[in-house]
Length: 290
Image 1 (cartoon, rainbow, N blue to C red):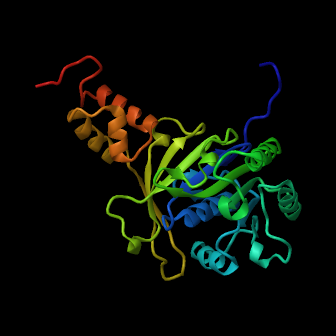
Image 2 (image 1 turned 90 degrees about the horizontal axis):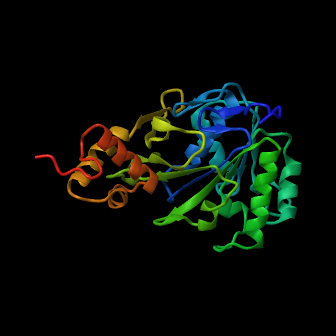
Image 3 (image 1 turned 30 degrees about the vertical axis):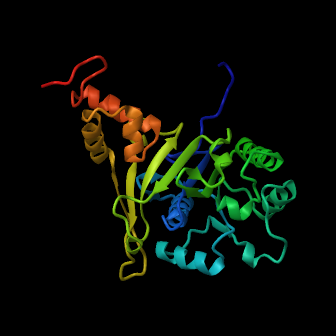
């Protein structure tokens, strides 16, 4: 308590600070790449992304192992001229062996290629690390790598694919080095023609509290006459609360209500508590009001 500790530096407030690590996962085609690029762009430019704001431009390293240079360039063009503090690591332009962050040699090689980034985005983990589906030595190596980056004052963002039950590499969800887990999901009625339109659910967070941790609906609008696109977003709290109240009144438990809405157990109990506080459903031990 008496030790002189420097305050945490905000990277993208209030979502992410220095010394933090986040996992972002979602199904194929949901918009993970646009989410990751939007986050990296805002942090590098000192701008904002979905209401989260960077207090100043930060040095950002975006490491891509999935799309390739041409596809990354096409997506970057939608955001406008890239800020000078945004650096890209594109393995298909590298003549050396493929990066494998599950091995120390791959970790050292990647770190030798960058300067001193404040934020590193790994897109995607399966394409950059040969990880097993069960815990093992490779998982421990990645865990140590993340902890080393956090001790060095860097923020880390890992991007992963998802199945119906969670991340493809479920071992990532349980990494103790993570303090934020974000799930991107298709909204109800979504069609492929809708493009990058997704719900953002915070399954684990130490930075966000209260309404800041409520799920969001985000959409990347089509490019305008200047060739750049813009984001539109809104909170899902009101819609989720109304749907939760209807399910709770039908006699569903908080867990069953959360499963029906596709939200985490923690979010389901928060909705139940809010509904009780507002008198929308009976409190614990109370009967149904007639």
